[in-house]
Length: 207
Length: 207
Image 1 (cartoon, rainbow over the protein chains, first blue to last red):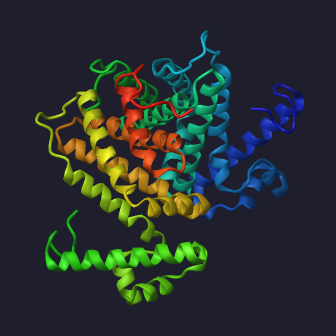
Image 2: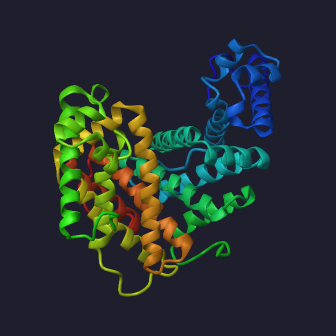
Image 3: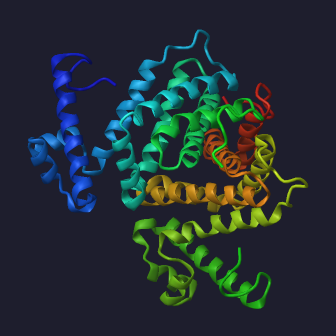
């Protein structure tokens, strides 16, 4: 994800990343300690030892602290996956294979800090405004996936379909994994696999 | 969908339906005339010749007028489809065939009044709070589909996966159909068909 403040890996960019991480860590700590509604932007800025202006330079509002990380992980997942050898074109199976890889890499990343993932899920389930923001963000992730598949040569309808299926497998995997972040990647993979090769289940049924 | 006010087909239920339709028609007329933000619940109640109390007995708030119809169409689509001859069990293809039929019947119903569908889409795209409500409702439709597939003997993960795929095909179809309500049913059908029998496209590509 290109940053307005510096090239990836540059000193400036690393400093920017450290500040953003400090603000996120402070926010999650405070949300866990006092509850989301009891924490103000001023509280977060104070705990992270940054000014309010700095906070708003990094995050649009208090809600955004909870989502910027996920967006960065999606961008990182996309950067991480090599362009397929052949343009996707109109091939739904090829588009689904790419979508599977992108979504699984993304899910792996967002669940690597299990405690942060659990807290995020808990806050989203408890606060209707965070849930609304989360649904809106997820529509954005589908659009981002579709854009990537298009960039890899997928025809427009094929890219959109595979991206939407990717989000669908994410939701299905979330339902199957329940509260356990360790089960999310295998459950999402299972959803894809059951769709791509129906009749075969790659992991044990959860019920 | 059982109504708290009367059995389907009863005089009471028909009267309830007429009142709800009158309120919806009045609301859509007013939204089209003045814009959504300029219309109050009192305006809608006055145009529909009902009291405010009656309005709130039928609809929780102003937003809800725009969604209750869609919910009724989903309930009607579900009632319309006969139970499959064999329980779905763990069969993803069987669950997808049922989801396809449910979603296409639903989409057919919500686009039958083209003008109302277009206005609904327009309002949702222009008002973030309506868009948020719409996304939340769509999560509810996926859950309702999953419940129906479960009722038809689908194992839990299979039901959820097929329901999520149903919503994904709906989104993909919407993207392909653009603003034209007449294209929605074939576009959603095309999305399902490309997934169920990849490589074959049942309708002409739109691009």
